[in-house]
Length: 189
Image (cartoon, helix red, strand yellow):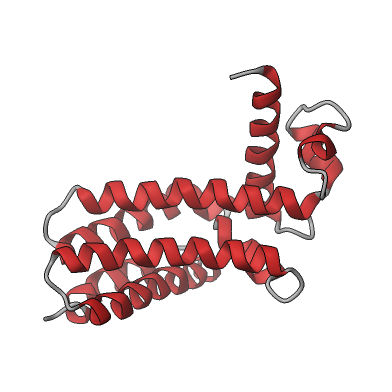
């Protein structure tokens, strides 16, 4: 990768980390430049539309990473119920070791910007749709009917997102564990 490509990638990764730690509004362009150790002017060179364009690309990068992680985790187990439970238990452990201190990447941007930026609202919506579709695809493999798999994919994602929110307020992963334990009840055929 060229030096220019590395600079852009470093800006996006730094912005993504800061957005999930501090939120969109609390993260300044100058801070992103400083923490990414990028040359002045490089942010507007790569992102001529400014911070909002950078946030869109950072959500896309994060969504791609999370989507790949979900898919890899779900693919490890043939049984859909066990696969989803295993993923949630893994997320609970990850919350305890990492996310509790770093925040949830897409939720922070979605909550802060969805009413003021259509482009950010849409990129967050696309990310959540991707996650829900991964659950749907796993359920289709388990012979769930298409519409039921679609609805349950949404519900599973909602449960995980909600459990993360409550886990942050409680300071522990108990809500994620409770969601994982209840997955067999939800996914009965």
